[in-house]
Length: 80
Image (cartoon, rainbow, N blue to C red; front, side, top):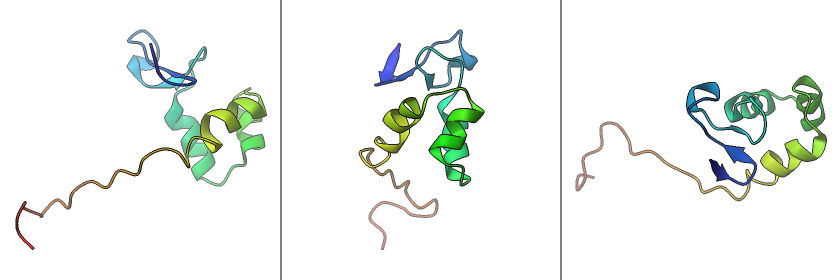
């Protein structure tokens, strides 16, 4: 099932983790590679992806994804 353009999930692929559509490469692996300082080009070579696949699915998406700020663990609603 496609959960985001170019990203799919299925119980029979990588234990249901979000993966690049049509591959068994999970999104977390690619994001970790980019976050560690690898370039899009290096990541593409590492995982046999085209540069367009990497850029289209991650570089252009990261600016459009909403930012999630989890609540502070010790914060109680209504307290300062």
